[in-house]
Image (cartoon, rainbow, N blue to C red; front, top):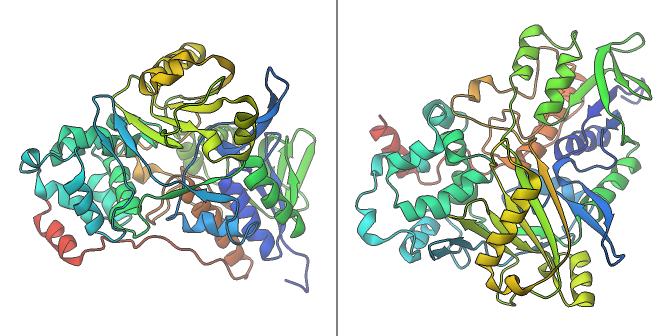
Length: 490
């Protein structure tokens, strides 16, 4: 590459997938420009400044994200900016509480499967012994035989709720544990592919030895993640253009493409499309020469999950000291989890120490499309007071809430129609957590993995070595269970 001009690539989208792809390209000497429509990097993990009623400048975001130890490729990206992952801190547990009083947690479990699952079932009140005899063992074995994409061939046309009914796990286990997993996709289990649920359970539990312990940033996302990664990319020579929406991709005059922006175009040799599903649909519709008509039709078919709401409250008194930093909930009308930010985030901690209060964040997933943000915010506040009764006496000193509907939806039967990293045009690749990746990855890790894969596809075309990728084993960890599952499979 040193003897001739470096190829120039536009990466459209500055979330995890786009930042990963841009980093991977720039590290190999590619002339890279990243174009992000918002004012800052981060995508769904972006943050932005706001000022509280008391004059305190703080950072608002779209809410809590868990950085699981199984996110090998995402963590490899983060190590570019902080090699020891010093911007992350571990949370001690992942407690789950049902409205009827049942509670579970994952701390203290063996890390290696299948002992982790066995000990969880033995100690958990969600798996009453008298009901375990009714479990459909043949169906349950499918959770021990997960390989991608094979699991999608077997389970993609079944919804997650139906699959759990087939397995006949105790109702308490379905509601408390499995539905918490499924709702992390921002979707009702009835509208989520059972293959996604099985893959997720494999990633976090039955296929890996890291357990369900996870890390969180010690500062708001911009300060902890995006400012250091942005500085790293600029140090590699990448150009970062935020607040720059891309309107279309057209055939170029001097290079293969012209990426059309409001403040002028970028002439490039290749493009990484790393937008959210809605952004990709709009871009494909506005770019009639991009890839092929069949590919653009697939892009047009992309759909988003229902709305979700993030509410953040600045309270005049602390929540009880026994409350965990993060709590997943089940059985409530809309409340899915509660975070107490001062337990781990420096900015919230400083405010809480100064004011004597607490910073509490609430999430509601898979809300009705016709819902109103303010109404749902008030409903979340009422549910918080039920879960943490001491907050009923607290005065809300300030509040912020964000409703969005831009996460990908993975309904039953959709796997074969998903976009892949590569397209009919080798100079156009796609990255994001909506993209089909034939590895056991999900959520933020799918975004990062697809970003590396997109960069690797272009690098191969440039005759340059790509980047190594990792995943949990792409098969069940117990050979006997895999064999039995296939022998008994319907």
